[in-house]
View (cartoon, helix red, strand yellow):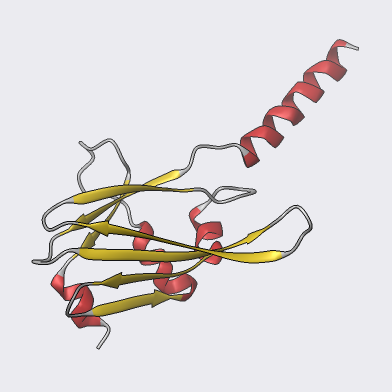
Length: 134
């Protein structure tokens, strides 16, 4: 009977860990000369198993940053996030760029180069981002 409770506890921990795990925090750093509006859209499922889209926008000032948490359901992996997040759009008053699809979205979830910071993931918003998609 003791073995049964250990197995049940292990299974419950696995189950809770997969759906209630810690989100990925991405530090968006604006290195352009104008404010940037960051917009992303996710595909979600409600309690009736119907799909719906949720679009969120944030504005990041000049030479500043914003930390955004991203939560993937089920296995909470970056691979899952690439499928759940449909696009990232970056807008300035003069320019705009959109990263669509899993391969493009994956670029946002890149590892931080400097390990001294609190968050493991960062995305640099630079002028070259807007020039690379022309």
